[in-house]
Length: 209
Image 1: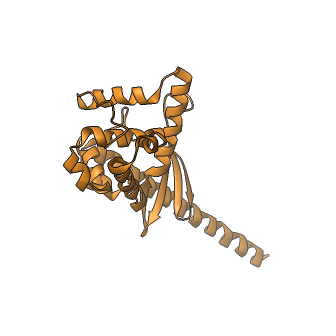
Image 2 (image 1 turned 90 degrees about the vertical axis):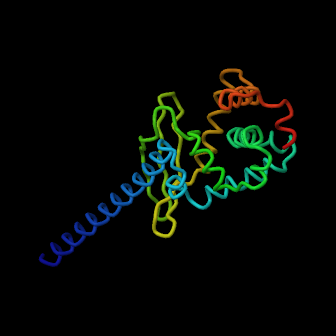
Image 3 (image 1 turned 120 degrees about the horizontal axis):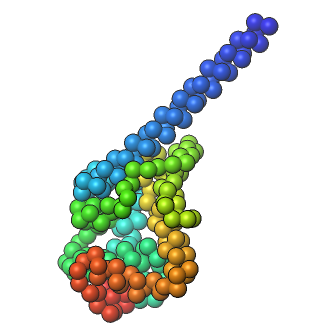
């Protein structure tokens, strides 16, 4: 009887410890997210970069290479959100900046110019699920079926945001909305570029750097 009671007590202690660890991980993920959100709101690129995973930064390295070298067909084959980023790079950045900029530089540009300030704020994070060295969470939206998933990776003992799933999810939503509303994405993107930068993009923007 004593042995059984002791075993149950030890099991309860173990469960409590595991629950505490999971709670600690969730809080660390929220802290990482809040750090990134605050950095974007305060135009602080250094803090934003510290909250991102190496894979997220490499993603923008790749987009810059595409913007510098890809043909029109290659650009049009990109997911919508990546296509918009490439169009933005070609439209908004001078040629000499495009040639020397890397993924880190692009992130600095976006944060410093307030282009990652999210309407309504970034502060809400829900449905956190932790799986060893990775995690997912949801950024909720007021629009139906428009919640966006966000991936986190554990890098050298610290949680970092991985933007890749976020981009893919936003691309899916853009496609769905455009289809529902009968909108062609490329003309819409060109109009958005003009609104963001104050100048009309050239007509062959997608076809050549």
